[in-house]
Image: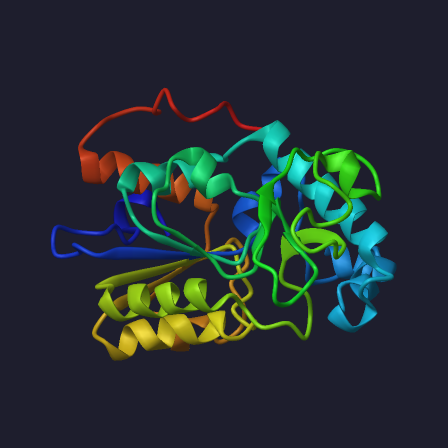
Length: 259
């Protein structure tokens, strides 16, 4: 596919919504989770610690892993893909926990899997939460938050969704509403196999939206699911979309140099 025949949103697309996964953040050094080169394969002990049933014993490893990932994200900053989405003013549903969409300037972000930039109380009935400063270590104090909840005394934890935990209801409700009102639903950097995220593109399509997948290596069968499949680098496609939609030429001065 050449740039001249690549799909580009048109004036008829007034409600563009993005669903993003770890692929959009991979160039920061975070990598992806699934596949032979993913975190779960390379660090199986980390995958094991992501099960909610292992709490609270797994807390040191959770602080170490998610604190490291948050530190990498904050150190690198948003990618050209994040920045292009923000400049398009489109709402985002994300599986990522790195806060890079907000750092890029996106105002409406549904974080389906929580955030590694927040701490919460381990107690199910306590609503304490606090921003954290990503550090390097297995203790919450290494990340600027207390080890015990100042409200109820329970241990604190990163605000990320573990296996066997429910997704945050407010974020899931927002994601559903966004998919239902979209007239263009764009999926970037996700395998599309994790539920309930995998249901969002079909939901948008059932409400009349065009659907697009942007992925360097689209999964088999993607062309039977999406109206358009762009087997290209999202960090090239999305800034190009933004320039064409806003009728500007050349590289945006807001795009960092390639890394």
